[in-house]
Image 1 (cartoon, rainbow, N blue to C red):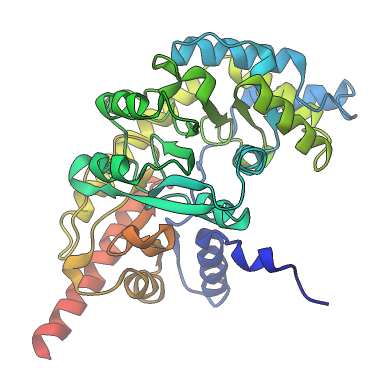
Image 2: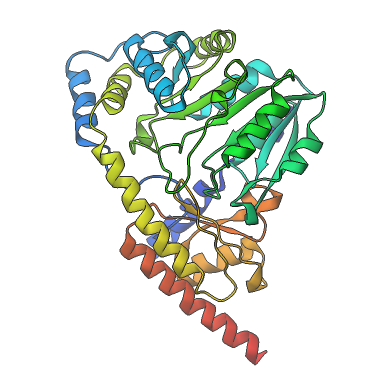
Length: 394
């Protein structure tokens, strides 16, 4: 018995592979600083945990509605309407176990084999994985370092075709931390408004912004009916293990997502949704404090990376990733990432794992303490000095 052919087209996330290798080194007694995993290191806010515990005690342990708890969907609709400057109702909201199902289900519902999907490169690897898995054609658009890792808009316009059925837009972005400027959002809307195309707007990091504005393309004239907003609770409320995400989309897409949920997950855990309701409607102090601390760490790691020979790092506007250009080291991204793990005990990700245009970069997640980030920078600098000495000797 063999796996279906389509399984050869599905990819994985390299972050988890690196985590396994790092854990193996730790078992051997090596000290490793983890800057590879994109997961907030802050606890889930206390009132959210208490809401989840209370929901369990009150019996929120049974099946719930497939589209999501009505009260949570109403709260999401109000929150999205307020923060994006649009008007949407709960009928457009689908609550799912995490953000990835929105990618998976909406692509599955909309794409046919041969359809073209424009997506950012370097970008979250699951986009390309799902495009290929469904038999559609991936059309990568390079993100430009000199533009704060926004799209190359000339390339974007040239690669639009009558076969383009979806555009994936991410702002702020993983792995770059880049924010798409408002003028680029407007230009994309102008290019897409009259086309038979849907935008999957991944806005999972929209609350983690340090400078500028995370503008949603859904707010542009004529784009609400052409946009699927992906958001969730994992990053904003440090709820990665709760598995709670949602999409806001045109009703015909929502109806398709509900069918796919029925055939896969049945529903999202009821008690988790009650915790999500508390997160969305309760105090936001923890979010404010987390973002302020991330900004402090961002400033420290970018300043430190720019002092290391061969590294050049722009200041990310959002998310919690630094994406330095390391071409000056003379090493490939994977070679350098492997060397940092084995010699410096610093776990990072090879930029090439995020697409061909990520080659020459590394991704560091600064979802770790400032003390650990400073120690990691010190280790990298010491190792880089040894490399430089060996190069001079050679």
